[in-house]
Length: 278
Image 1: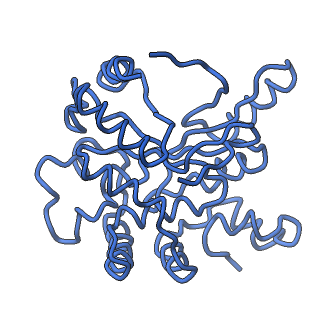
Image 2: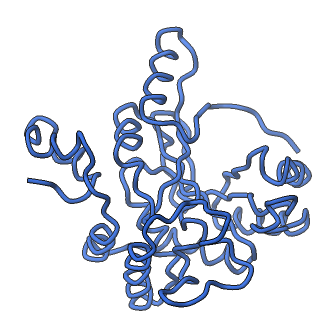
């Protein structure tokens, strides 16, 4: 498993991390998964065998039960570095500025929602992280399962799945655009003999600033499939197809800067935002 530095810190993390939202199954999280302590131990062992030594959790998962289960499976944990999650670009910059002024520990990471279906982070959040050396940890890389290949145009989703339901995370504002992305994912996946999920995760691993992608699974089989994405190398042509079909529009002031200040801003910053204007 490849390891990357998390931002400007000395911490090296595996390109895939184990997400644990499926642990517990309490309350609304029952729709996501209900992995018990035995299943959690098995999945953590699978992750360790694959070279994954980073486990992601949150106190909201199953009202704390996910953390309790992880506590049963692992003896101790210590805070070595700090990061943020779901900040806007200006909030991240303000936090970094406050830490520098007062000599506080600086954020080394930001955990964000980012996928082929949702590239809004490329407007401000990703560039801010690149500028400040704040590494990106991606949550929900498959857009709540929408990019897994289970959802096809004109077909009902799998029974018990949460995508395109009241779960609504992430929101799908344009179903046709979603299925355009899925169509390309499936074509590439079928041509390579892999799953659509692996292609979607591999695309993320090639995006600027991404240190690790948090993966979770209802079943051991899903986890094994997602872990295999770490070994998938997409071609330039495959990446270009995915970039094009998922490219977000240039919002203001980005379209104006692309027209009037491209020579001063440079191409790397602008290419994060999809097709150029002008």
